[in-house]
Amino acid sequence: MKKLTAVAAALAVLLALLAGCAKKTETAEDGSAADEMRVTFFDVGKGDCILIEKDGAFVLIDAGYADTSDDVIAFLKERGVETLDEMIVTHYDKDHVGGASAVAEAFGVTQLLLPAYAGSSKHYTALMKTVVERNLTYRQVTEDVSFTLAGIEFTVFASPVEYLAGDGEEEGNDNDVSLVVSAVYGEDSYLFAGDIEKAGISAYLAAGHGTFDVLKMPHHGGKEKNTDDLLANVSPQIAVITDSADEPAEDAVLALLAQAGAETYRTAERGTVVITGSGTGTYSVA
Image (cartoon, rainbow, N blue to C red; front, side, top):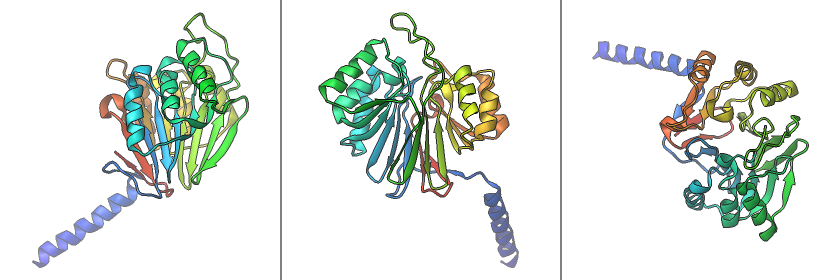
């Protein structure tokens, strides 16, 4: 019995040491306590739809596709959403703005934040029609916008990249003028990088916004020449990639993330990803 007790004690010490060396993340069942910040990265295929919630406050970054909006609306209702406090559309590609009109129609939005250019797609037109019909308050982000909800400090970074319009349904270089959003709650910090590509990444890095624990990778895990610079600058513990089985993240990006030591979660593999934290710099991923 003494030998077993000694072994058990040794194992306990070893586990304690390993816990002390581990990353500040842990896998948990879905769900969050009242004081927790909860971030849901919806599986909408290769597209973005991200819900941030805490203490009855709700912020939606992008809205996925038009044909995934019913699923998003159903989920938001399950989460108790009646009105979105903020909706941020990073840019007007269909995989980001496609579901925005339906979501805004279903719930209303206290404030809608938009990039500083007029889109040309039918999805942009539908959204602006809903804005007029619902008399929604909206703002084009021409300079950085900050606001606080339920103790979470949000900053929406305006893009300094000049917008070059495309033809017809094409939105030109709109990926590079994507709005980038940060959310900080206590010691928890998130950066949502939209679809910024080489020029957008360079502009973001030049602004010097510092490090963040969780990074929503730009452009669904696409590789740019300065992706490694972005990772070195942000230094994420956790990376989330909103890709799909048909259009997966690039292997080169996955290799860079592994080299950086970031825990990587892909919607192509995991489905919807939920990260929760209570402001202590410790995260649970479901």
